[in-house]
Image 1: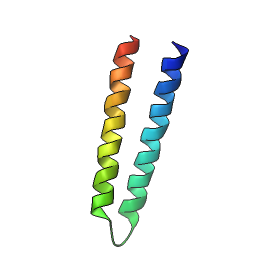
Image 2: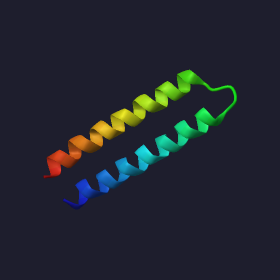
Image 3: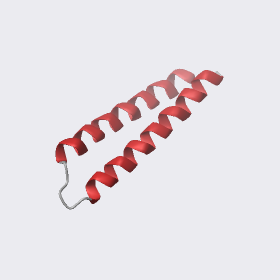
Image 4: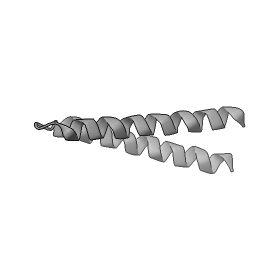
Length: 58
């Protein structure tokens, strides 16, 4: 159970880091829309994985 909690915490941290990276990219005058799209897709994958593992832990 501890491993699952550690993995969940890791996924939460990664999700937050991606959110921060997206905000950073969006703050530039010349936004790299391709990079922003890639980051958003990765963030969504992390969110899906987090939800899946949360449901498995129950």
